[in-house]
Length: 214
Image (cartoon, rainbow, N blue to C red; front, side):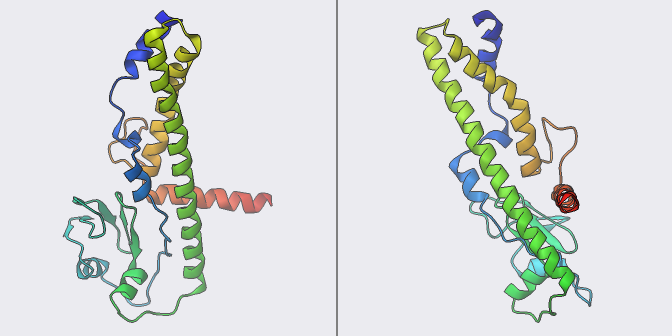
């Protein structure tokens, strides 16, 4: 058993991918954000101008986040209607920025209200899944660290080798999950980057199927 998993023990010492470096600050920056609906105003609104007016420094389709602590260069991605910071998870859209800047707002339509509620549910789901993954991954890594200490004194301890094996075999699964939830632009574990719009679309489809079953 020890010879079979010797390579796994060495692999457990390699640096953890950035998407899995789950410090306390990772949980703090993934606080829930009440995501408003993607509002469509009757008159065209220059969302880029709103972002600049709110203090975002824009370059191309990226912007610096004024809400992040420390360096936050070009962590904000935005479309013509919504902006999202991949670091602190701040989200804003035409309505929220317009309100914050004290500009007049058009009344919410039923469609916009339903989208806002859906985005709230998605944000809560996103946060819950992330924290569950963090808790499980930390448990695995903690067990692996204890196992390595045990193996220094008892090289033939089977439970310790299995703890290392659990971590080794779970790495790609957890890596892919974190890349999905953190929208890594250069993923290591999935073939193509996941965008927030794609994940939201999958969430919406899952909700629709659940309603159909009910």
